[in-house]
Length: 281
DNA sequence: ATGGCAGAAGCATTCTGA
Image 1 (cartoon, chains in turn cyan, orange):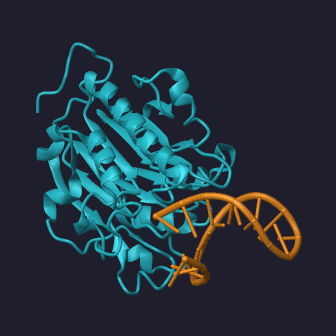
Image 2: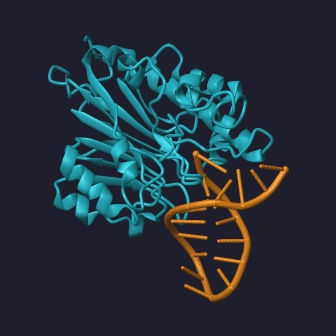
């Protein structure tokens, strides 16, 4: 089962490239970020023609997430819910459409577009950390339900210095600070693992290159797009790849897709709906 | 320290992103 994530930086501008990529790799699930379109205007037909079902949570101009899947998503939820914070605390995140989740093939799929934060001195940075803390609370609640989780998207955080082309230059800066890394680790805790690092221990692998200063041509990138899976799923993980070739297209997204291959043949797809049962892998 | 590029909104230029 191929599960992919891609920040397309506008689905309408990147529609042809997205459809071409789907035809090329045939993913079972594709999570998109920065769709930048209201739900009524999301181009669902090209995906449905290929046999996919589409779930969207977008807004005008900014943000926006979507789940494209061969198997229709169940129990689709838009925004945060069931966090231990009160409803009023969750409410401040409602106007930015950055998270959509659903159950597909026995896995809880959580698609996120984490705020960038601008700089450590910015109000947006406070928002970013609060948002990550809310995501951590959201996952705490999912964990109580013993769900198998696949959390993916644009995290706007490089988990370690191995994930930055010039870590000294950006030490302590946005996307590289200890504050952000700690907030991310508090989301992951001991329950979620970085799919990419199961297979690759070295630096030099990026998922995002700045549009400016010829960053892609100079290979000055960052690895900020991630697929985290429940550790119970790690034995099922066959591969994790970043398809950086798309960054060389004309009019590319500044992000590349990331994709895992999970062997789910022996997973009980009827798990959801049976509260008294949970997986034995 | 600044600006570099791209997209949306909307028609000149600003806001936002990372």
